[in-house]
Image (cartoon, rainbow over all chains, first blue to last red):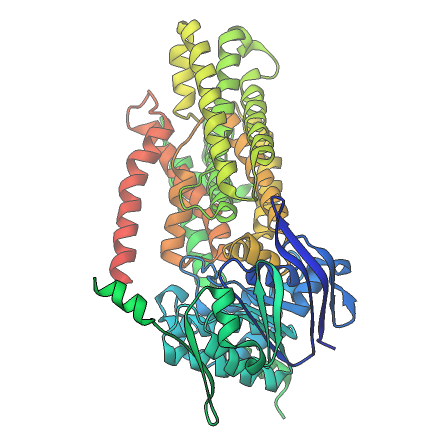
Length: 266
Length: 354
């Protein structure tokens, strides 16, 4: 029902192709991690799936061609969170999460009792009930990230597109947020697509990784197939070691070579 | 078994609490009463109240107002008070609408060239049709109205055709350019016809002048239509707060919402400007004061701005009429003189309680 098929999708900004004939199949209830260096086209691919940028090619969502769906219907199927969501000045938590109900509220209408109930359920599920009346801007980074996630959940879409959901969080909060997303994915049967910079976390949480470079898919599969030292060094222009441990899985460690260290010392 | 209606519905979205609505209504009623009581002719509170109650259908109360006094009340004081209320409420909600769709706290209803366009229209009318006061319909409000709409239309077309992205900054910059051009033209015409200087200047500073009910009748349809549109769009204005892209991602076509709100706010503002000149400050301070006191949701800001904007301008008009009586101070001077310190007070109190 909630599987996504991306076939030969290209996106161009001012004549430059930033996503170049990408094809990916995302099975329902799975977690796909988009990785790749800055400018690889991760965010743009997410935006095309959310119908926010014009694209060539076909995106099929749960059996329907995305471009044939209305803006409103698409929003009921797909929730998208950008890397830095805009938080309106002074907005309270409960009102902000209520924005997620917009695809279900009639154009000029107000939230119904069932909309309010969805918001209230989400508040409870993400432990936000106690801060429901506080302004979002007064919250800590971890709380704010949960509030933003709550808005996406209030949208009750089966597909969740998250652009760098952990970029502003410390290591503990990064883990908590990703664990929460995984729990919700299992509970609610969500299909999750995230763009992630942290390759270790991407490998730990996503079932499948897609490595993009200059708009093209250059690697696809499980963490151990995609996250090889050779691939990462080539596409990220980085120096890394990939350590695989039986109990903890795969870890990508950036390293300084003796030559770098030597240069730094001078 | 608990019936559904008794289940806790959970925390609801921000709305106008009944006590706020009551308070706003009382304040508006008090200001309105003050607006019709204060003036050169001394009308007593008791007889004015009796006269007002007498107008309620089915109620017969005899007031002791003479025919002349009743005429002053119904043909001078009440229409003027109503006009002040309509203009004040309209400018305040138009400002709120602009601030919402442009996500810019400094946006006011004059942002996209309304003021400069209306100013040019009014100056042309004053300069080239000086004897037009005897016309059946005064050309001044019509010229100001048309100028205001043209100013915004040019801004919108320029902003849309020059924009490479859907950024609102381009539109605002186009507004700055159009306003500068129109103001330059207006100033040139004013210099050429220097005998009009005083009249143009008085118009630019804002003046409520009523001839019976005609001005009220003139702007009422615009205020009703654009007020209703802005009220219906209050929830969408909240959604616009998350930015165009995220608004699109929850199913709202942000560009269309912006266009509708701009049209509604501009029509209402142009109508208000046509009968009152350029009354500054109301469109910025009233929505902000409401925001600081009652919260940032447009579900609260739109209705309460309408009410407090009306009350504020009625009060400002009372001051404008009385301070130098029988001469009048331009009402725009009053709104700034009292509005600015009041706004700073609200700002100060909001920061302390935060």
